[in-house]
Length: 114
Length: 114
Image 1 (tube, rainbow over the protein chains, first blue to last red):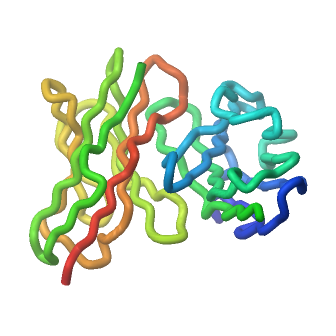
Image 2 (image 1 turned 180 degrees about the horizontal axis):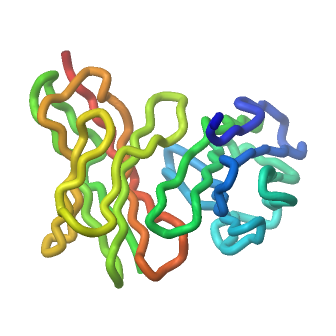
């Protein structure tokens, strides 16, 4: 298996623009997680899905952030409009059913908002 | 509420010496505990986990961790550090009967000095 795939790996955009981050989880995994990592705040859980259904989005910072999972093999995280404080590395992770199972992380998308 | 504490932001150790990265947790039920490692510009990589059974857990790359219920700790250890072990290490906890998301510590940067 290729592991969790994220695209793009790097994104540079200007304030006010829409940004879409993409994730393909490992086949057969029931759970998908979106995280944000910054020096100041560390690793933050934004939202997670179970069988394509959002379970907990309490970590989504603002209405400017939205996430979807239209099918078991694809998820998007969208920021509209983007702001400089959104600059961070965004990780997607997936895991099998069962709370004892570890999460597998993608390589991340480094977002820079100018 | 669940939480994880990594009391040391930075740990330095000489190559060949034993290393310890500390983690304590606070949960309201039985914990599942995990260690992850992050190399520069990479996603988090699973090292090991404690679910039940033997308190000493062995994982990847020669790492091990000991679950201590009375001290609510799950310290990561390795008998002989390598320069290539230099990375950012995260401890995480999930409650047996809780939601499927992980609660991550703030991370400890390990530097192995040649």
